[in-house]
Image (cartoon, rainbow, N blue to C red; front, side, top):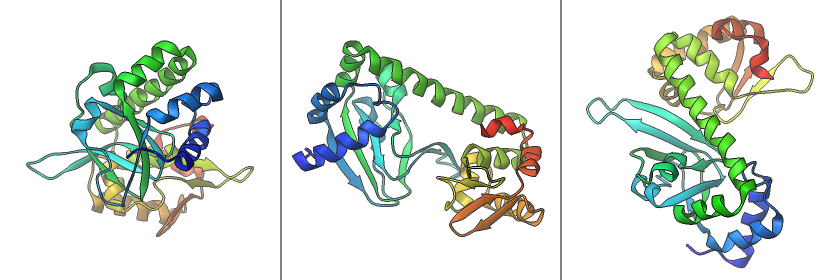
Length: 242
């Protein structure tokens, strides 16, 4: 739907905080706003139609969106990305002009804005600062998929789970504890979908990590209690948290 002037200001303020738009001059960003359409989507619904990705570029304003593929024969699901506020979708469609055959699922009530791909491509030509911002984001997504593929090929499930948790960990100032964001309240089944395994395996590994005091888990929170133990499972160094 078209955005009201009040909603325009809300979207403008949000975009200013997103890494992808922070380098764009406020006056230029303000001229972009009327091109956006705004939508909300309730939890467990599908906020982005995969066929629409061929024509539109989506920006997550609030909430989380799971991007996944499902095997129609087995029902097995693999989560490719977990999008949050400030993330965009879909870079691949922007590059090749084809729709992306994926399933999108809202993990919260989400807000998105979308804009025709042809306008985004024009902005990339007209505004070098926007161009310079989008390339690092593209690289980040490509590196994440590369890590997903190599982890699933070369590492066991407890290594993959430990790496997933560390990926979403945020340091508590000078504390030795780390709080996990974005995936902290996901079900064991959702976590399993992110590392290519099943719920029972994730439950078993989380129980082990809890017993050895690597993690403290509750219904809506995961806290890393002993970083060194978790890093050992992940086969990583302390540098991965910097």
